[in-house]
Figure 1: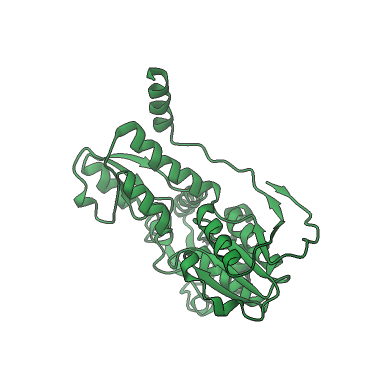
Figure 2: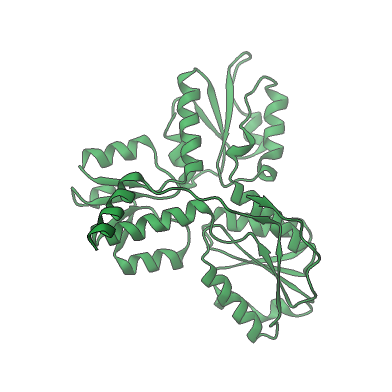
Length: 327
């Protein structure tokens, strides 16, 4: 990942944020489903949406992926893929009990948090998990140390933590939160528990932070920011909040049909970005719609060059290699 010193973008109708859209974890998860379908045939079952984007899910469903929450509906012996958000040990045990053949599309950054949760629990720590209640990633992480983990979502939650003096405490965070998202809560935890073990900076998702930095930069230079992303995408909704915090109007759009022409009235320049689970095709469609509405010129503001890649599961790589040799 390389830092870029952005120059002032030329005067244009639309300013496009970079980085935006797919991160390495999302790229990997989608590739796992597509490659599994090629190697093992249809259907392939996926627990939960592989990523939070309707277009991606619909395209994979058309190729033969079946998305579900209840593993009892998966026929024994079938291929099952765990989504990028991760799962609890209980879900893995259920899959094994049902004799399902599994592929793990969990983002490696999420896996890193799971490993740390197990390590801290084994060492006798009480664990504070900073994250959004009900988010599928949080549910999976909580399942790794349910007896010693406490979820914190707000400053009020910090004040209610029931830890006695002298307790050994460590903090983990939902990966799709940025440094900015967690700063106030981590400060409150440190003030209340001075000896608390805070998470390493690289536990925060690089893509989340990069996309928030980029949307801040375009929000300073535009009158309206459109964030392309799904309504159930945590990081996409947060990009809207970040833009609004800079004093710029911002709207979440799932696709180009959501754009209200009235939003554009009185705007000089429009910013466009996309959440980490949003394909570039949806961004292109939004740009095309803005062109139809009289905003044809586009310039890009690049803050960081992302060059991170996560490897595929070894068993899937081996099968793909065997198929390539037979071809």
